[in-house]
Image (cartoon, rainbow, N blue to C red):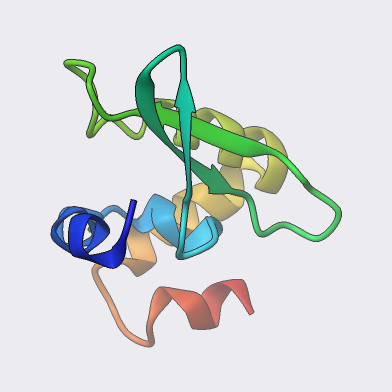
Length: 95
């Protein structure tokens, strides 16, 4: 999937959960279904969180929250959610 297709999708990625994931997802096709794989940026983590684009929950971030909570911890996830409404930018909180 090119930037032409990803560009419009990126404008919908406004949840603070995306700060924990690499900014460019991998695009993969599984059994004919297009999916995005968002890669965790925690040191030592190589986990990708898959989201299928042709499903009714294509914009859901539930699986991302589940992984971030397990990988980064509940406290960091809560701080990120609060920080999203304030400044400095969330990326500063994560270092």
